[in-house]
Image (tube, rainbow, N blue to C red):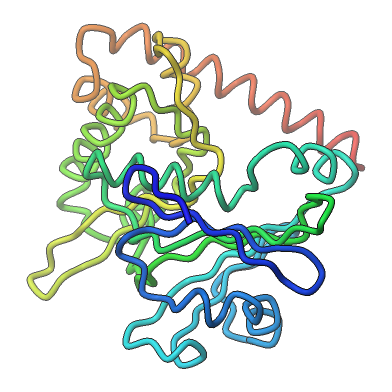
Length: 267
């Protein structure tokens, strides 16, 4: 067992390899008891929250005798490249946990992280990795805000709030790398007030410094509608709003060209 910045590291020997864990001090899961069983428990559950070609997210509660539900995200691997690089680098689950702790320290609202687990062979080949956090039943995401499906009278307030949080992240030299509207969620309370949450951190990185181009490259992924972009940028960084707007449009156009080319090659 090792401790680092409050997190606890464990290596647990298994029959065909080992499990490596990084655990948050607020963890609620009895990891020692369930570590050998988590892959089977995950595979046998049908309570899917989200699934794509690579990753799968499921909700659990009774399976681990918990009072509140949790989310477990299983990260898949793609081909030979992943098999090679994850022998010498941390898994997506570990990267997600590390980034979640950075954001928590900045008081950016995210679902409470509990732990991350890597299952490896004796040769250090990554078999699977899992990220575990608190389950939050979100009410809507940023796309719903853009489409004015919710809080149409508060959209300017929400855009400004988003700008403040994005600036705080960038001011601490953190690049989100996946600032996508699907990764910004909201939860209503009993007074019809909202809390904004960020999710999906495995691409988050730290940089020595962020210039305007790096910031714009991160921000273009937010897909802020044209009518609200100036509002966002004037709250985010008013002295550089015009330059940032140009860079954002430039990166968005490059993204569209790349996407068009990729679709063409696939077809």
